[in-house]
Length: 39
Length: 458
Image (cartoon, rainbow over all chains, first blue to last red; front, side):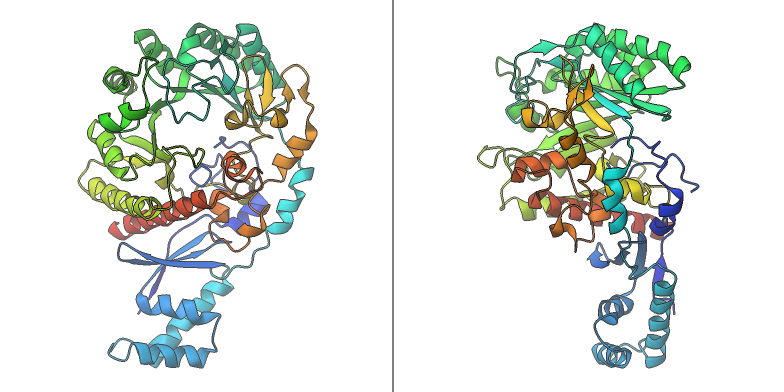
């Protein structure tokens, strides 16, 4: 039986390579929408 | 780093450095807790003993679960090592641009709220209004210092910004003329106590304000206890109809109610539900941050009450959502799939670097909560940032700036917390406001539980 279910989340490790564009809104921090979520 | 907790019938496992969220059963919950502590055979033995009456818990099942945990670890979704700290130390060398200004268009107010961090709007100084010329120069300063960033934000703040409404309108009009020549897009917001809202304010706000923040503390007796005019009269009856008219005219979008709870109402969910029952559905309710000697200050005895209130709020929100009368709560609006990247999560709100406050006479401060603290004055809108030491202090004030945060699972959600709260609690922006940390961690636990519950319902 499957005892672990993993929710879909943004990969923070990957975002170190693709994020950082700086176009996001100032801020709360954790609920802030990313302007480039496809990355 | 892994954080495990149980809430509302869910067993939840968070992997801090990948951002992964796992929902597990009680067996996997226990197995993950032991995974780094004991050899595999000892884990199997311990769990076989604990779940001896459970027919579904066999050695084969446990080894399968163990294999799943190993797979998640290998995939970088569990026990992910923290490799971000070195990035945080490079932040001082980052070239940052200014992307948002808080324009203090009025250092005066028509209310006299005793808990006001801005000292009834005066910020410990004289009453004053920002002139159009100062505001225009502030907008030019923002354009000049925003580099290639397109989206710029300006918040009209106070005091009470509606006490200088004509200047607000002129500044918006001026900013619009500058968008095309400079390839910029201004996003305006307005924070108001509502006393001066009229048809003109509503029409202009609906046309130009991306968001309006409306100050309401909830129940009439709570709101009127502290939010009074200079004659001591409560403001609830005057502002609620105005807020309703404004929100209704905006189609219920682009606003939120912003309340403050104090020692007088640690049972603040009653105030949140009151606002929801008034037809407002975009809500926030913030713990007061003030001198511990202030009668409004939250106490250690209030803490367990407040923590429980956050859980009550999350459960009630899920219930109301199911009933088709849901509402949002500022701190529970996590975006797990499209939320901020790691750079944003480390650096936080950008106060003192990307975001600054401008006083009526044009002085620059790291944020609205530092205005009036002369040691933190950054410069002014004509000469720019001249106090580079303070700016650099803010540049490196991030999720990795405090040794106390090293073992905190929530540091990539709070980004090290609010610098102003830390300063007021400890005297240093690198200090710790532990009371606020406890509240923040509970809010994140509740917010993630809601995401889990919503996924479960789907």
